[in-house]
Length: 327
Image (cartoon, rainbow, N blue to C red; front, side):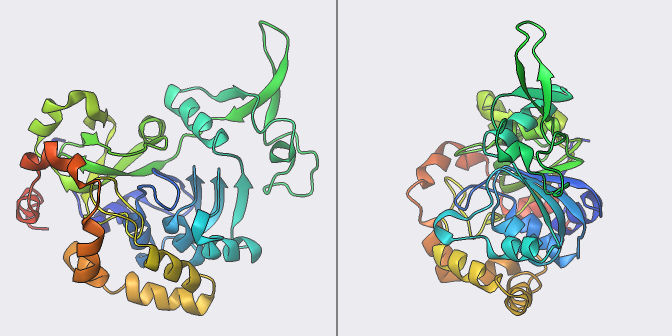
């Protein structure tokens, strides 16, 4: 299929379901994650997912607060300077979400194993400590031999750990720009988005910009995600808000703190969802929710020059609408 552009509503409806293993690209509070996709998951009432997270973000924090995450495998669950992830914390403490803890070394290696088609990955990290011996899936077994199995190196005879590789049903990956075919360029840190695009059975891209394919031909060495591994593309400017997208916009620190504070309680979560999830139906309305003054401040970023080589290929909102048949 040459044109893979679909709406956000269509993407969530088609590519999420109860009981699925869902992975997201990008990480950390200031990293580029598919937070707009998480908002739509909350709007559509997605429940019972097994979430794979290199790092927790405000997207997973929100979905957990709304009761959408049944189980989560994570490398880092905090929000750094913004504090504990209150929505996720509340979901775990109430027993609604099982949190299986690894590390920022463990999750990427497991994703790499999935990308390479390996059933497991030998490891010396997370091995010989409570990250291996303690399992949220089997909390009454200690030390637990099932989370990270022991294997023997056939060449040296040494004993080491073995991670189960990660092969999600679906991965949703935020990218800076994509063409309608699904070729994508990412500015900033990747956080295993390259490997995740190869490990997942289905891949959906969330893009700040849609560009002409000539842009990808001009910079083929930067196309880290090619169209042959992509199933769908969603155009959603400001899709990482309140986090940042390198070259496009900065983090909204004020909203970051306010959002995390609201997700601390069920009442605050309901209020947040009404105001910042259910209050728009398209991207134009979404940007209006953020506000003109705030948008001007966030997009006046010191990294804007990084987009200069690509600007002549960026398609306007109207051009993207035409490609989507007016949807």
